Length: 176
Image 1 (cartoon, rainbow, N blue to C red):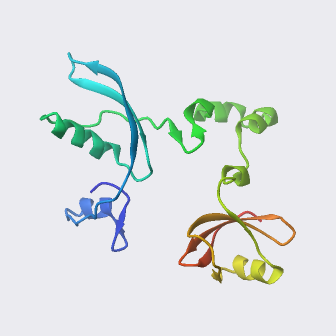
Image 2: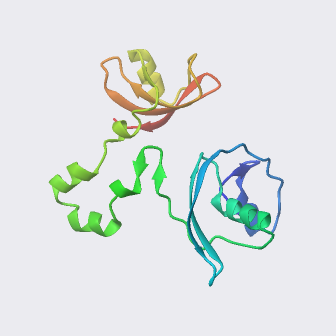
């Protein structure tokens, strides 16, 4: 009830703040691996690492594990170690960013171009006419797979991203 999942156009946490409870449809998620890192009997705490699909709620997983162990439990802390191909080992702290924000070498070494972030997403090249329509927010009918994609002009210039839903390409983020 405290997530940002939307039901009838409102986020669940908004319903929770109003004291209302709504039915949430179950989602299919995948737990690829769970690694037990530590079992602290003295403090009744376990530490584990989970490899899972998007849409997995770790708080709920903690509750489910506690139920299976015939006890109660909650999540004390959460650290996201990886999202897709981005790993915490390659990240920088906010303090470092503040300290080196004017250092071009640091910026070049640690920042990824937006286009590079999306390199695993499909890309589509638009005609000149489609590019104008796209930039003006007109949805373009395309026979392409739903999801996020990269969009390029006919000159192979990166325009930005689009969301494809039900065969329509809708402007998302424009980089021009």
